[in-house]
Amino acid sequence: MPNAPLPHTPNIRDLVVISDGTGITAEKFAHSLLTQFDIRTKTHRLPFIDTVDKAHEAVQRINDLASRAEEQPLIFTTLVNQELGEIVKARARGFHIDLFNTFIEPLENELNLKSNHSSNKLYHNADSDRYRERIEAINYTLMHDDGQTNHNLMQADVILVGVSRCGKTPTSLYLAMQHGIKAANYPLIPDDFERNCLPSGLDGFHKKMFGLSIDPQRLSEIRNERRAGSKYAAIENCRYEVNEAEKLMRRHQVSWLSTTHKSIEEIATTILQELQLEDKF
Image 1: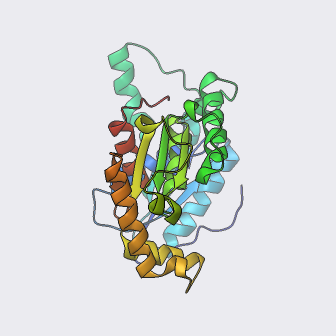
Image 2: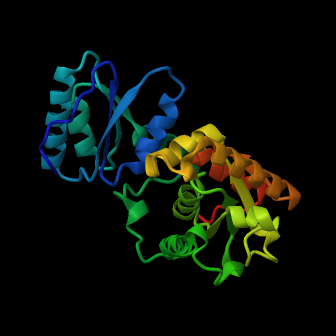
């Protein structure tokens, strides 16, 4: 574990997430809670805190952060080992929320069972069916990114279509990684608009298709980051492509949404609902 001090950003509340695992789940939960408040936060995730020495190092880094901040850090922990949790709670300067203790005891009472207090159990089953399904979904999605191949499209759970840089690839990967969904995606290009047809090779897969669109101005900004000053990024071209793509999707009765003001999580959830796909995890 690096001993470098945690970087503090002035006028932003520091959020420290401490876990004996990756801390990803705890971080997501903390962010979900904090979105209910009008504050800005900077997240510091301290993963794999699974020994006494690491717990003390984490405390030192948090206290160094607290000494440079105007307000105390917000500390969210998921430490199954009670000894490590007590070290952090007793010695780290900040506002503490123990996510495990908050929920474990009420669940033990309801289920009439004792928690097995297994550290990082979620990530220990690397050979489980669930893990293999996740890897298979990710590999499938990478292979079918940006219309690379039509092979095995019948295995796809969803096929995303839309103009270049509207969010198809990140949405596909999120669906694969978070939900175990095999997602293919295909760009809609001027050749498709001239033919007035969806990409070749997608015939027979209409029920699997979902479209993404985007505001032309935002699309131009995104494309200019990649190819500044090009026709590809010109606002006139973006308006043309978005307009033609939406006309094409309406003509072929492909459900679609605009990604302009939506998060990846919102887009993915809408797709799951619209196509009635089950989360495989």
